[in-house]
Image (cartoon, rainbow, N blue to C red; front, side, top):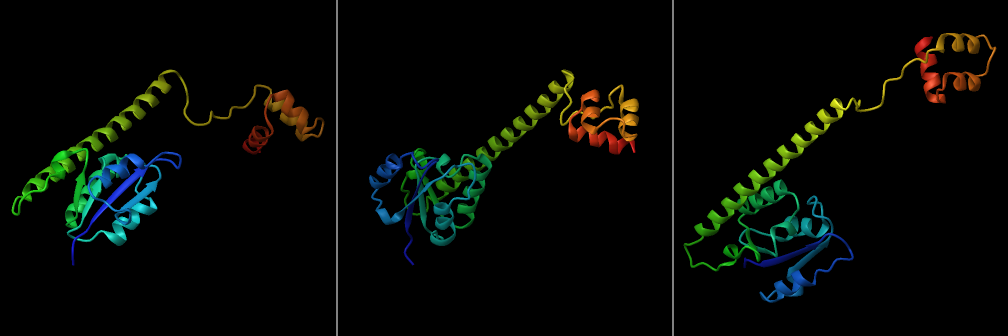
Length: 200
């Protein structure tokens, strides 16, 4: 079976324009039927055009052309995984913004692409790992800073008002209404009944 070349363009929202990517493809000889597009965020890979391309169209020996790596995804770990997938499935990826990937090499020189691909996978994997570590570190620092400021994360613990015993006793004896008891103890309805359940 003849190998085919597909072109994938993506913008993040409906009102953004695909023209720049499509015209770059057409200058490489792409026809409309070879161009797959998505107008969806690059935060994950769950996009109808891309999934159709990957699962139903691309075959071993085919080539996929994109304008830049972030058109595949904004997530470095996802890009790394996709590059690995293409490599494992014999699909060649050409990235217009990475000229080395665009070269037409003579027979027997494919190792150059293999090398470029491996470097990209390695670099993206490292960057993704660093980004994850940075996020984890920031979260830990944020929690630590909040603790030092005396902030309790999550809901504050419910404490009994000082006059709780006598107000609760009066309410229980039917001398005052729940509404009055809430006003006297300065508690909201939910808190009041929670304290009641803790007392009984």
